[in-house]
Image (cartoon, rainbow over all chains, first blue to last red; front, side, top):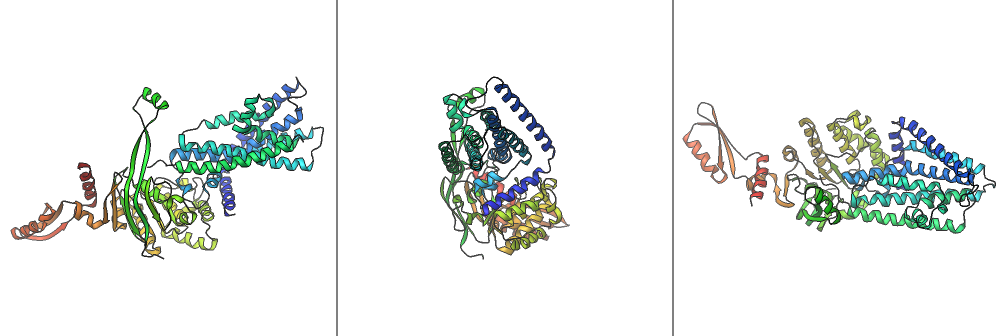
Length: 261
Length: 314
């Protein structure tokens, strides 16, 4: 329970920190507008040639894009700043202070930073999702909405786990700034349903970098296309990945030697 | 609270780092991509010592002697390669909460407070992390703020503080949970003399008041002389000396300095071998008219230098 309180307090402090940099808000709004606009243009281009893409109609794909931007926003707000800080700390050997605190070290390194202005992305994602759903032929039920919420949560857990596993790798290789760009690149694959990709790549973006799972499943839920089996698989995978992450983090900590200075 | 049993116990503690090694140049760099050559560096080599509860011990040694590595092993940041360390009955490397709650680590060259915010906000974070009840927290915080004469500095963003001010505020943050063992790694580095003295006085006072055990490293001998009765001298990962600061000179300084005012106020200074001090003094008194006479050990800096010089010569 105390761990939650610590996390909440860090969030508050992070917000206080961010409020000093208001220019970022406008930059993020601009960035979000560009992101949404390019997304919309590409989708309308695709659907000017075909009514369905791998079984997905235009409003459905719009919802998918909404989920992808929303989830990306969550990651950019809460996960990425912490992981960047962690990488930096490992490199400079400044992780020490986080490790001498009587609190779960994984929690501490995961809540120290927050970029609230990135929440603009969450809003634009939600807007797109709203527009997509409103254009659907079918109506979305309570059960779908519930499944959607859980699926988004699972997606966030998967992406967080993926990030932490990769970042923990810094304990071994120390320098890994390019991971960021790598992730951004792969994350863009989430704009399209997993099904459109050829077999090997589908597995890659599902299990290796769980972008496909994280984005497609919530979108399926929101558009009433989700199968129970897929849902269970996603849940199982998220739990498994999280457990592995926890183990791997502790394993990495044992490796940590800190830059002695 | 201070009991007679030892707060820190270290037996045969070692830390070996495996560091990559290669020649300079592009070719060597390419080769090392395929096959990394490594070399084992023994940063701490089977050291043993005990520190009693409430003791203040100075940990001396040149850069790279193994001081920081030892402190990091004692605070649970590094796993020892071999040997045993016990702090307050806990094994640091297991990083149990009960252990972490009772220690603190202050590194003079790093800061842990939120850079862009007033220190008060960081103090609140520590309050939550250490689960300090609000009613207990205030008096402790206010007392520390007063002892260190920090005043309103805690309300300014940390980035706007001077180095010395920041260090004082850092120390307040590090002691809010009333740790029983303090590991201080060069807490006065880079500070001006007044600020150093201020922090020194505070540490002595804190130790007196709460009987906290302090293990301190510093390159400033004034810190050590003011705070530590006992010193541990470490070099190349091995302990060269462990005992009273006063005994250090007896053991390592080969000479003493005799200062005298003779005849018509002429001041003379003689450096004589330690075992000939009494004869030299007697001769001086017999042969000259002496107004004033002092026999002194060389300054502690010189003694330490002698210790390391002797070690390198062997």
